[in-house]
Image 1 (tube, rainbow, N blue to C red):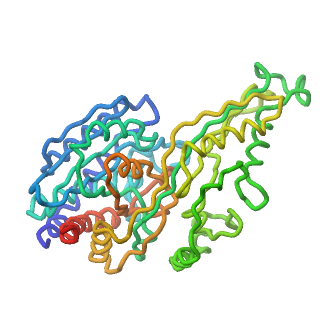
Image 2: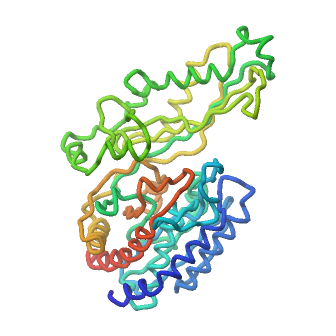
Image 3: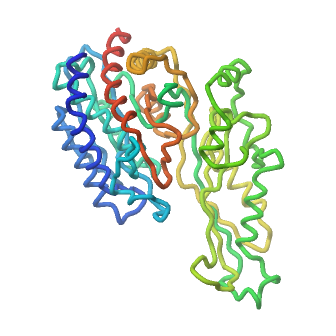
Length: 456
């Protein structure tokens, strides 16, 4: 293992330059204008996997963006790790809030600033470089398969098809994912739970065309006003979600588990200071960590309609729109919640407007075991490089494919992420610490080593 770690140290500059190179490619999966760039990123990942020493590396086409696959089978008797990640990124809007161009990575204050720096190019690239270090120095303790997709940020709609069609190729003992965060670099942690997701778009239509707000205002329902009232009604005075049946399937978290969560180091004043807010907000009766880990939520992700250009235009709009996401917890299902939301939203619309609800994509909540060989290996690997045992935590985000891996491949997942909640993923000025990046590369080989030992 010493040779592996020495190799990582000796090649740090190159490892960083290669990451900066892939960050320069705008692999925005949600925008068809970037289709060629998404493919170019897949080809970049393919080439780096080949150079690192992977076999049977290919860019696998799907009906959407491609999946990059590669493998290294050193001994059929050894356990196999399936590494999953994604090379696509979120749109960079609003561009004017970035301190530097999102696809011109800048290293400052010990951090890499670029779209995808943390989510998930930086974390994917840790695995490629750790693999290279193991291969070049005879330190690969397990077989490994890579599956890096290009549609995670748009719902992974073609990944399930790929899994079904390639069950034999993807046979493994565990899925290893780095697409999550730690409490801090001083307090390492491992996510053992993820919330599910139901993502909706609503459209409210009033008159058949935009109207003069002076001639028609006060006599015809304004879709923006109606939509605002409908959205406001989705939470009550205790910030409890009012969709009928929304909480019916929510699994109760025991008092013991809630007490264990409360022991997680968390400074509420530092939390508010970081976000520049005067107070927190959320469902009554739960702490901030509980609200973001074990409770379901409903959030408005965007609203638009009418005139939003420069100057003034006195218009009563014909239509208003909103995108709404709901984070789900164990026993809730995305399809059931989408149906409940649709029925509720249609029921609260006044007769003066028409409502259309569209389900975009979703995913199921998961809780991963802490007594598995994979979790024990991840915990020991982190303890080896950080000098501290990691704390098991529940993440607030969603990785819908984790449930899919278990359903289709019969595989559990270990979520060994090295990001931080403060990395501004999905936001302007996304960044990833250099220490996080290199610590990840240093830690991953130990996971292979310990997984091979614990799996026996």
